[in-house]
Length: 539
Image 1 (tube, one colour):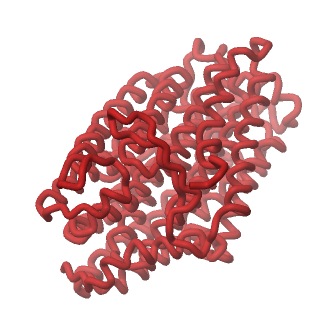
Image 2: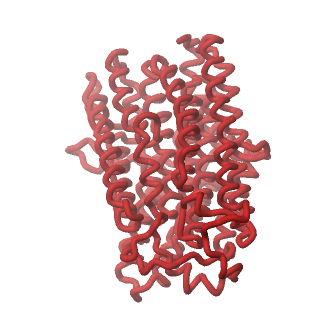
Image 3: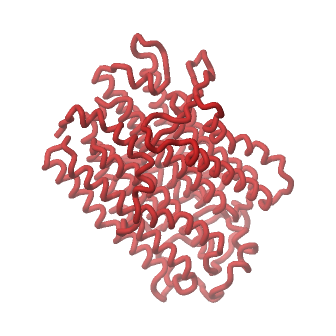
């Protein structure tokens, strides 16, 4: 246990400082948004300091471990720790949350509650990635759902209540499987009752029980990932949520499902994972191809990007199912890469809506001439999403492909079928993404009134941008303020800065992947060691 509780400080700081938001003076958003941004930035800098000065990249064991008995009668420990599987996602969470808070600058409706919920999400997400007690993990999983539900239901579009209800029903009901399976594991065996993950990994579960436990956990994590067929909440939620919330959903929340599959299913139930891995690969390919095909039919830009996210998360399943180090490294890199790409695309879709007052692609067109910086940034992020060589998406998907293709756990025929299916999905990606770019930015015909022409940002940031309806879809006038017509101005310095902070790592990872893979290489090697040593042969 470390002398100073670094992880406890990092986890609790946003929530504790968020409790002071009601005491801030003023009714508008000017003070509270600066306060929330400062809290996020301080916590992110603290995460960075701990990573640089306190974390050992060459160790695969848990570091910065803190273990306190919290509620003895429930056998609940405040047990935190980080390793290669979690440190990269914690850094990603700090970065995305800080940028999402900055992106929410225009929100004016009940800003104190809005920013408090953003900080509460920050605590829940980092707490989950650092939890080493299964009951604490479940509590963080549940705690993180509440801010998302409120953010969608209060700052959403016309169908916000439907989307928020669907989100909470899918995620809350499925998360009960975590509790049920966790209780079963904790009470099983003569070793005594414990929720500590390191102790649970040492228990000897019968194969049949392991498979049932694995399937129970899988249901919950598949919803969060999301995986076919329990993915339908995601397009609705993304379609209605404000784009700052979408950045957190795409950038962090979806990664919780992939992380949990690796940490709990693969780490605590390796025998069951070896049996179910081929089915994960099949579901991964279905995710990739089905969501890519469905994205073609989407007329709403945010829903199109949402289905693209589902498709890309299929590569995470494929990498986890590969049962070798290269594939698992690809899955980890894909989660970090997609966190950056998904957050950037949803941010740009939302800022485009702030100008055009529509997300329907057939109502756009010709925007490149009046918003050249927006066009350039959206194109660059789309190229990263379609796995252009030299960008992070290419390296991540290549590692997954090569990892699965070289996996000795499967027959050549099975590997060929899976890799061919995934390759077909990759061919579809540039078609629907470049089609969206063409519909939104190219051409001279548009249903939007561009009579206002190109206007500078500074004349609109206060009069228009600061009055954004914070809905992300076709608005209802009562949500934040009265609906206004389209008004075209190019990206502001704030918006360029947010996209640059996301785009630079995409390019950096694409050119030098080791800058990220060094975070988790030791841990991924340890995670697959049991399968390699056993010479696991499935198909």
